[in-house]
Image (cartoon, rainbow, N blue to C red; front, top):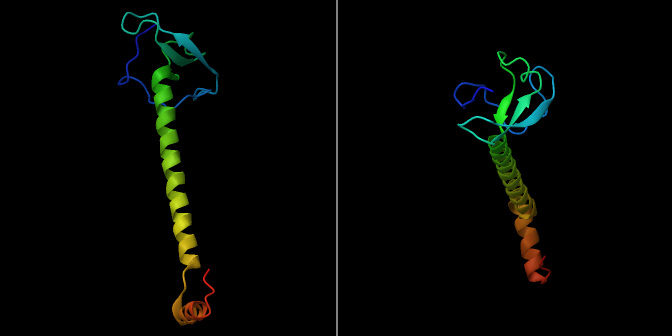
Length: 113
């Protein structure tokens, strides 16, 4: 098998289950001197048709991509939660003249929220 490097092939993100051609992806182990015993994902068609550009990604790189994508999704969720908290605070805040009068009445009659 030809030794693959990151500069000479397409970049795929994460762990994929199928190639662009629609065929399944399998896990293999490198037998090259440059990457001995390193696991990789490869399109099953590409194992027979080595001259075609089908999916290839090192397993460790795919896992790192997955972790990075999860980190981005987590950050977006955290940002959304903070926005919702701020919206709730604004909804609970007294607004305008009516809100001020309501707040004063509660203060006068000791009916704090």
